[in-house]
Length: 146
Image 1 (cartoon, rainbow, N blue to C red):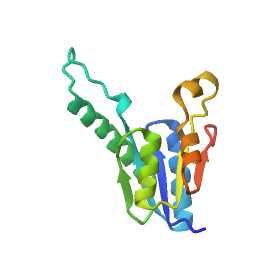
Image 2 (spheres, rainbow, N blue to C red):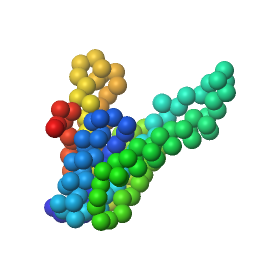
Image 3 (tube, rainbow, N blue to C red):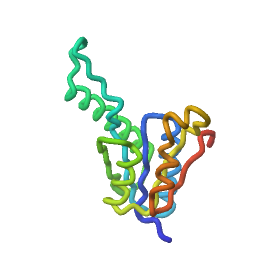
Image 4 (cartoon, rainbow, N blue to C red):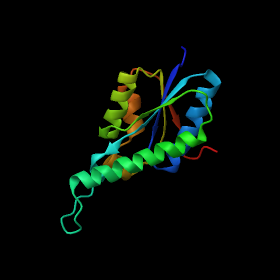
């Protein structure tokens, strides 16, 4: 299988940084196009009448955080092709799959927090969900990757 479109799923964690490096390296080796998706997670919205923070202001701040994070990852990449940016709003695992399908990605690259036990039961695993529900290959970078 040829990998011409590599979608790298990121957030603002160190785990995502490792995945981004792996994805960019692979893209350069394969001369593939890169897309980066950072899902604006609605559960992180902070709306407070006491602080005067509205829903729109919270969404704007989350979008700015996403754009800043994506830009930092792109600066790591010295590729010769354009990097496509995706910042959908919603549930991360579902939006990553939506973007992968719409953009026609050949491979998804993402990190994992390697949660286990009760933490995994309560919060779930985005990487595990993606692996179980996608029809394309997924490269998951381990949390202790050097």
